[in-house]
Image 1 (cartoon, rainbow, N blue to C red):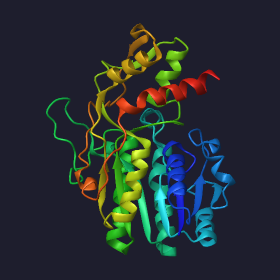
Image 2 (cartoon, rainbow, N blue to C red):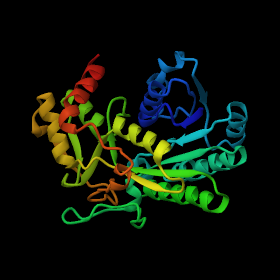
Image 3 (tube, helix red, strand yellow):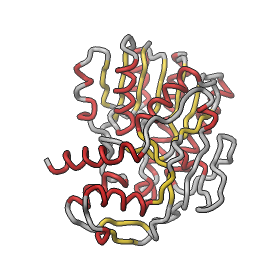
Length: 317
């Protein structure tokens, strides 16, 4: 089977490529990545020595390039991870989020339709559901309404709807996953965990938005990879699946955990003006996916120390 992974040099994409190549040794993999600020070829540099992987540097918005890629390698399955994904960046410059996350997805869908792929899996986010109250809100299910509150989330909600429309209109075999916050190695340093580690190691102020009580559900990136694999093999075409670990923690508590692991004082925490439209809480119900046999294997309690140590070693060398 030929499997195309978009955004395969990014944080989640590189872990997914590694997981799939380790798991399915008879399959062939194609990675396309624009290698913008968050895509790093070094994330998969060792994988590129394997003849089962070909790397294409290119933009999914380039219809001619995408068509050539499909015509040359004839992918059977497309796992679409390529996206602009940082909320702060979407607030200061939303246009590229619309172009990549919506128009780029449209280019891929057209190619999938033309070349008759067996499955298009679209990787989305729990942020499309909007926010919950800090206390008492019932976690979102796949039936919850979409109510995005920032340009990034709105662009992902738009692409979700576009993907589903290609299934309903053209019969394209699609699935969608909406995942909570990921953590793990090789994450771009603007994200919360690596950013706080980097600041703490330099004894610099750790900027925490607002009162720091905003809550997120955190999932280990390898559990996310396993979940996508499960959906590809057991998921029902045309369906959406939530992926969460039920590990809700406030931003301030997570920052304090990191400082404790590093042996740094809480006095480094500096509260800054809150982000525009900052959602208070995200939480999703993964029961639908769990009925397919997937359950998370990793917890922050078991893995956060090792991950912090990984970043510490990398940043101090």
